[in-house]
Length: 310
Image (cartoon, rainbow, N blue to C red; front, side, top):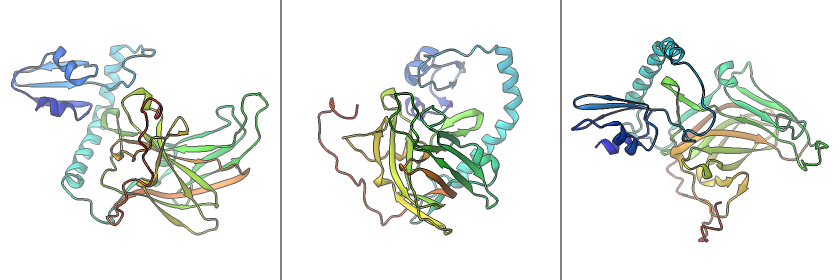
């Protein structure tokens, strides 16, 4: 029972067991660094913070007194967020309430300036790879506007040969007490986007949260084709159409996207055409369509694992 609960990967785990688990046993079961173990007669509580790099890197030297003071300051507000999470879990838990045909769920919708500012904006100019410029702003229509100027001018450094890209990426999902989480889109079959574009194609990128560092750069892509003009369009894209890449290279060994470990969504413009661009986004949602029976749109080849997916 304890082992099954410990595999659920929360930041705070309460497990009931017949006898007290000491620190060594807890670390062996968790596979992560255990910071505190509180012994009780019939229960154990373990509070830990996940570190994907297993402790490698420069440690942050923060006095414990400051950590305690900062923790006390946010305790009240974070408890309120945790209560809201529990209310949502008991009123809209997918394990209790079934997701039915044509049900959809908003993932990102731009209600205010803060919801737009949370997105990360990057261009080739930020990385000294080009001269493109972009902005992601909140409009009076309560939408997010991704706009700018795409430049094909190559820097004269003798290194960069091709350039011209701008990108926005969704913020990381944060739970109460500053815990990072992932999006679980398992019950859904489609990505639903209400946009108003300029006729350019935009690359959609779904980032994954995976354990081993060799797979941290795995991403899934598909193209969002927009129509020019003043009219809104609703793009309904099956998840079965997304293909896997690693470090920007399409992999020979393809596999369906694991929807239970979605970390973020990115939108990139880089079609090779210099000039202004704009993409107005009203909402991004996920939808279930039971008429869609396709599991994966691409062939899966049997190949030597030593030669592919590396």
